[in-house]
Figure 1 (cartoon, helix red, strand yellow):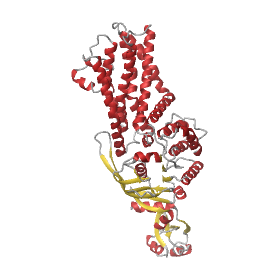
Figure 2 (tube, each protein chain N blue to C red; figure 1 turned 180 degrees about the vertical axis):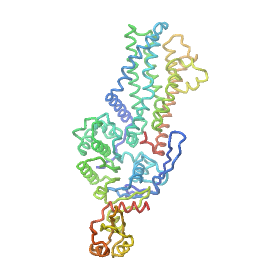
Figure 3 (spheres, each protein chain N blue to C red; figure 1 turned 45 degrees about the vertical axis):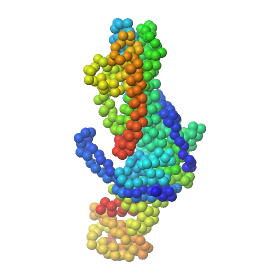
Figure 4 (cartoon, each protein chain N blue to C red; figure 1 turned 90 degrees about the vertical axis):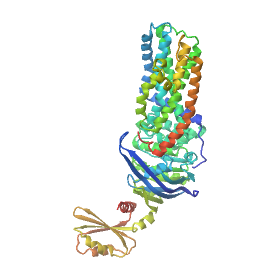
Length: 268
Length: 328
């Protein structure tokens, strides 16, 4: 029976994890509400809130409702799934498999980006439907691409958060403390420049802050933001995202080592 | 350097845990779960690890299966260092921890296996065939497409086993594999374990069931309070605790001073006593055939009502003797 061992493939492991996420999503109706129904409600509320707020109110409505429906799942979905692995006892057999756990997390991140974008698509469709037409965007294609990139920046932070869930069973506790601080601190709700100046350096340590500012530059004529313009924001977003993704591998390696030392993999 | 003829070789494995009560400022308790474990397991055989709850069996299993780092000492599995060469080792080993947890319950057994087949890099062309093969082997082919949350505890246990052998490991760690199984399923599982050994797989088994260990394991070790208290064949372990034969005596109003007359009988290596209200049960371990039941009765002339029976020393007797001796 014992044969030469097969070798894992990173892309196949990532795809397997993405596939598992989709299967679990389809198997559990509780996900339908945050992923499919909540964006409809957010879009309607946001449309009513921004109606009459100047010529770009549709763009404000789409950005507000889109971020509200996407950020949580994209940012925390992967970490939360790792927390579920702890609770279900599947973290041990998954870590015992030859595939490094980060590829499992990447598959989940991919699914969370996709499901976040589906939510964004729903928001866009609902607002266009109730407004009777699309918003006035100078470059719709650039807007769409940058919107996707915002998801990627959120996901890059999400990978690091997922490492916390491997590290400790108290990750949910830590996340709950920081959740809304992160939401406001990265500009998901309103531009970061409206916050006290001393908080800005902390905000700029996170890739979504840069990407959201760039998105506002692109879609809202006359937007001032940090005052250094679209390209600096875009460059900052790319640089910080790459930094997060490149340290993620190292962080996971250290975290895996730590949990093997502590022996807390089966605790939840 | 490890000896490559062994499936498992450990040298002075020690594992300590610091546990904090409460989240931030609770008291920290230090526990030594394993205290210098030296163990060798031959390739292609079943090795049993017995021990009471909390003895350190699962801790040792997790160290050997790369899920926990030892505090001190070295362990080699299939010649690979479990700490430094875990990447090479993991594709070659299987682990069955069992229980209700450890499975994705909202999806089917087949999907659970597909996921792990991909993580283990089982060739795509072989994947479905391999999944059907292991499902058939654990008798789960018919309900394979049902959600795992609908499974009984026994069916989940079988699915754990199927996942453990899916990638055709060279060594399989089984932590109480028949717990929760009905007698028929448990018997089939033991048959499966034997067939895996016939295929050349080395098996490291922990169990609470003495008959199971006796039936499956040519060699075994008894772990108590983090130490190996004995490691040998069942026959040699019987010898270690005093012999193949056991004579049970039940008597009313037994006096401890009468013990010396039993101890002096030729061939009696050990005398144990237990009290059950007015009844005393005396257990004699006997090395030879010299002691006859009549001689035992004759050694207790004040007890005409006594009951004397002879039987073969069971593994349970061996286990209890060793664990109780360690506790003293």
